[in-house]
Length: 215
Image: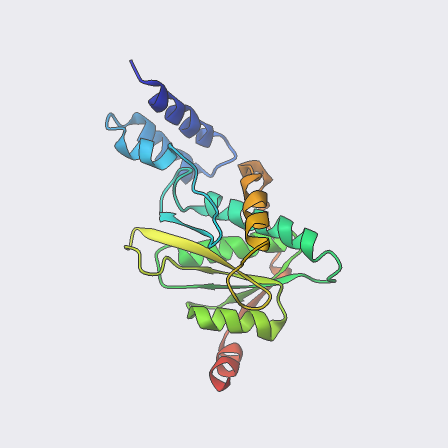
């Protein structure tokens, strides 16, 4: 008979079989549930990947304890909610988005841009991978209220990460860090607005590169 912990994991995983999640995700979750070896199932779902003061970081894959469009989406939706509360007097809230060369970094950055746009926030998305210092520069140069970069830094290739920055181009510190953590914790999958208009997404390229290098 399955122990209580494994049953809780199975229940959590079965929630990912709902139409809230895309077909490929549902197939991968079902494969985990069908596998007699429950090691990966348990590791993917036994806890939720938490948004901390530096963002989130984890192994890529399906599940609540993995980096995927839903865990990244929850982080972005929570950040959107906090930006809209904190900058409600700003006519057009904006963010800059960068990423490295990791697997799925482009997917996660484009998904995040769509979520920002769906929340009425202008997203400046770099056309390709860029170094973190350029993301920091772009936030200040464009007068953005925040920014994110998809990178797992020194971690192995199975990992990816999501770091959030404030309007000064620095990683988020108190009290905003704790406040954003609290907002992200409130997000359920159905709360994530994935379908933003391209009208609020602007691609950054050579022009921003040149400004960065000239400084």
